[in-house]
Length: 392
Image (tube, rainbow, N blue to C red; front, side, top):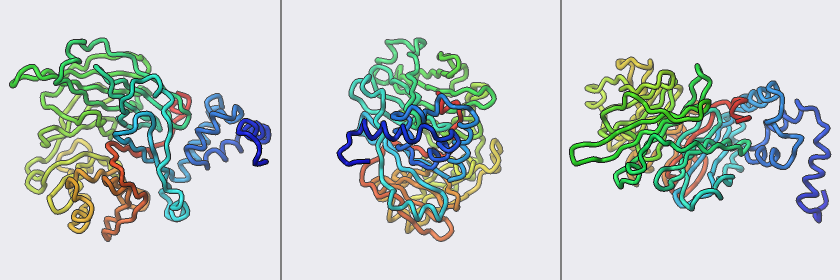
């Protein structure tokens, strides 16, 4: 294309030449493109609009991405209000070497940011390629479901079950979670709200939103113990959302199938005796995991069999040299475990350092992305993108 052509002219030629291609070939090409390019191609080229395609073609897109072992890490920075940032990775060792030069933070402008007052967005969680974002508006946060692949989004309806007086109270605090219920084939958002009534009494309520009903309902059995961090979403594992209790002596779960809160079975005498400060929970290799700060090292416990307290065991230890080098800001609070890679390395986000791949076999650290910015929230997206998520 000639350099003096305008962008509309280039896009017109792009669509003209690619329009006649067979749908299977378009999907094959799309599946090998970076995330941002896929979103752009969908926006500018009607012939490539996946959302009006055949379900079999959507499944082909999913299969191609899965075969390429792609994963994305989305980052939220406290001073940026209108966009989310991400880095695209490959879990294939050979491909990773080829992609290193392209490891840089990219930005996606949120299509709904113009509708909001100037306040930041928090990444609550991710499921099936969808992001759940909370916008810290007053008196209640706005909650969005957002597909970064197609830029489709949905603003969740207001929860009219909440008293307007309560949510304007200075002590009011909300904790969220986002997940998918495969038995009902439905997405769920959970909101747990706290309000201090007196020095000795606190009011706790919980609400459940389902995508199919597009309504909020009140949860019946709300835990006594306060749990979760403001806007930090619950961790999804085994069809349940999980939050760390504020007293750091337990994990609360919410079952997406029966909408019940429960305490996760834990061998507390063993884990408290052999552990330091509990920091956060994660999922490693499909196992619900607990990240602990031992003051000189980071220990990761995993529940090998869900619901069996005796199955908790020390799975990984990030040793003293790693701790001294990378945890100086706030101990294990500076390190967030994002998951396991295909080669067995642990993917970590380290505040003021960036993304690293930690080899638990020899303690080697490989920098994937250098970033001296403070990422207040981050989420790894490696699960398959379902047709429903693409169509939204």
